[in-house]
Length: 227
Figure 1 (tube, rainbow, N blue to C red):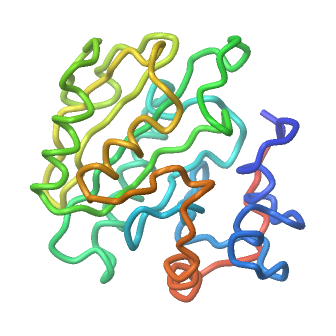
Figure 2 (cartoon, rainbow, N blue to C red; figure 1 turned 60 degrees about the horizontal axis):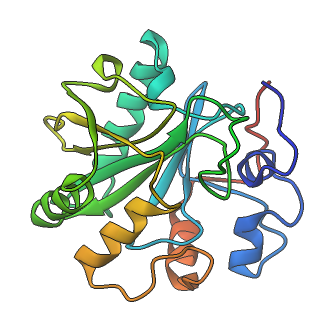
């Protein structure tokens, strides 16, 4: 699908002027920062990182969800990027807490986030922190499904999906009904576990973490947006 109007992730993937990453860095010569990519996916830094290494796995084309749309080739690319992400030197002895707040229908009235471009959060945590975040996020919400993998799960029109990726195995994928959940719901829960007073990416100024991500990124200012 072609770029959607006013999509920040499309703008960043397309290395367009005044992208969100360039504004967050205060460096308008840097239009995007790319940590890794495959034919259909890319890993970019989160503009409001909660921890060092907090990144987003995004589709290189504009679609409203990732996990609910996985097919054989795409799941291979997700697994490939997760494996490479976990083996980076800056994620030692940790797990990656993964979550997506997405919709099956981009045209539904409720806007789930500041962007409807598919993005899976990759948050390096300790085992204990990942367990606490999972428990806190899913404890009181309507469970839709718990499946061995994302392709085996069921997804409502608006959903939150979460799992923990490890070097050797992955936890089951938990899918929650997100029709009544606020935007950035999982960011709030992770922030509570981490003891962070600010969770909203628009208010979280972590320029130093973004500069560290920029320094280790092998790619920048390349057009990765596909149609």
